Length: 206
Ligand code: 5GP
Image (cartoon, rainbow, N blue to C red; front, side, top):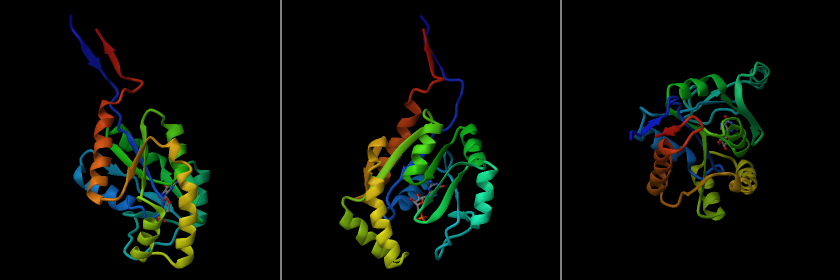
């Protein structure tokens, strides 16, 4: 008796990583990407937010005007977009699909609205990971320590964090960023497990 596993379509996976601002998701994603550049790519979003010190166009974000962003919405260039903390953010449809067709995994560091929209669009391909600090006190301390946002912005991000956590039950994985290396290893383990996931196009026959 011969057994054969036939998985003819080898598309990559979409790894949605959401977290309240300051929970450490960018540092975790950077470390995960650095560990496997061949198989994992990062989706660079478009945003109308002003760039922060040290951020580069085309590396962190594509920084565009509100007018250009709205034009891109009309031209259907985004697979999802959302208004977060008063600014627009969007994921390029063309780039996402190109990476998936290459069979690579793509990390999307996006907010909860975007995460849920992507999951609805790609239910079999998308995996949803939520990252959080051990508690709110730690989150606030980290936002203050990173010294990137003014007091008003920090307060807005704390209010938003509580709202974002309401979406946690819709996510598939929760990683608590208490110890950075453990959090990185946890995300890597989740991603590694995806290659064993049964997809709609996976056929096993005897
Ligand atoms: P920040 O301004 O701190 O870089 O990002 C603010 C929030 O916007 C974060 O939660 C970040 O994950 C989210 N974000 C970044 N890019 C995108 C995107 O393309 N789509 C959506 N929906 N959210 C995004």
